[in-house]
Image (cartoon, rainbow, N blue to C red; front, top):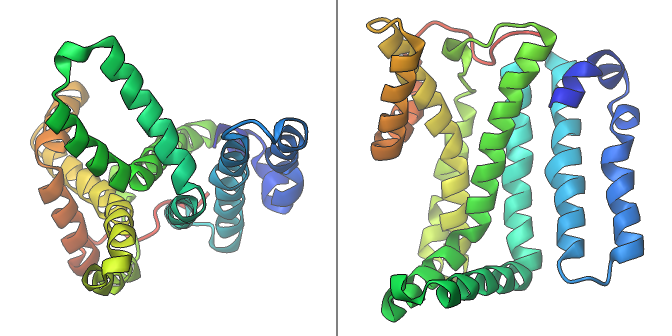
Length: 256
């Protein structure tokens, strides 16, 4: 995101040319080191999880000039790739996760109960694709803030609002819950899709607290506590705000 901001002029005119290295360098890695365990996954993470995300961000920004909508489009790429990643590389991810868990268990055996470990292993293996995607989305959010700073456009929490049609995507995946074969996809897709209402709810509450508390440090501490202990209510607030629009702020945020 910082690179996109620094090269915004050429990147908007020709995103594919500005981002060539994001696609070419991983391919060189695949050619020369493709036989190593996990390399194809890392290469695809770089090409789609980074390059394609940046490309879509710039394409949408060029088309409608709204930063919030460009951010949403980029997060959708991450979500779709997270599901694709699960379908293509589930064995690689499970093996890497199990190796890491076994290593921790060997190093600190007194801290791990066998029954608890087996339950934790099953649960974490189930939500591993979503866990990766959520991490990427929040990394993108930090990059989005850096993007604003770099191009000297103020980042306004009140403008972190997204089109109501996104909520419909959450409703559309609900039938997957009733299909045994699609339950894992449903759980991961729901977690991924709920990150957007969570982000919108977080900034909606931030704006509300700002009317009472002016000190940024105090607000940050309050929001961290709320995020840790009340992330589900935050998500519901964001989901409701998407439908009802508690404020008159235009959806999509600032224009670049």
